[in-house]
Length: 327
Ligand SMILES: [Zn+2]
Ligand SMILES: [Zn+2]
Image (cartoon, rainbow, N blue to C red; front, side, top):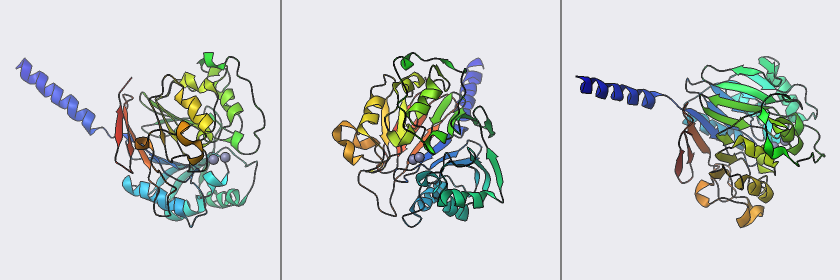
């Protein structure tokens, strides 16, 4: 009887873990912008950025493809990390396709343009939340914490970061990039950091002298794979997904810094980075698009993560997938 009971118990345990929905993260190919779709285990959705407006609404079509894959018709949250055309450009197209529950951003744009005007029109009749560092966005299964916004972070929080030694600010970054909303997304032990386009000096702010993010599993390298400070090593990400285009982002110097982290297992890329050549690209299997994609194309990378910290990354171009176990 005891044997029967324990076998039955095992069966229940196994079926419970199989039944748990993963957190799905779609890294949509918007050719060097950002459009990252989160689908929580309970089905709630959050889109982080909308890609470009130009190219005949190409990026909205690609985001729609990811929404179809997830069987979703509504965005509970739309986060705009900052008001650059490769992030906020597609707002008008997206609100034409899906109802949006709440818009989230860093506040008044420091660079105004057509896209910030489109955005102002979109939020006029909707729920809208301006976030500051430390805020939590209420999603039932996920903990979403704002790590940076409007040029600020959470000084005094986190643990000392030994990688900060000798790193100094480089200066030069102004405008919207330093304003980026940076998000830490957690499902149980699984942790993902999306810093938007935070430049080098702002990453130093978030990671030095204390690492305000902690350890993570998955990292979206800031500014589409531009060179980041080695202070990022303290986050100990196992996997990076670079949202570059064939000729935007995906810098060889950025790839090199990432690849030299002792914790990194793989750097997945949305595109083969033409100018980075053999020294700044991963193996073909983990690259979603090997040639500049056409209007209908643009393969996405999909992550499925579980609360124990394990996750799978799938390349929709070649169906190559890799599992990363719980730590
Ligand atoms: Zn960008
Ligand atoms: Zn930007």
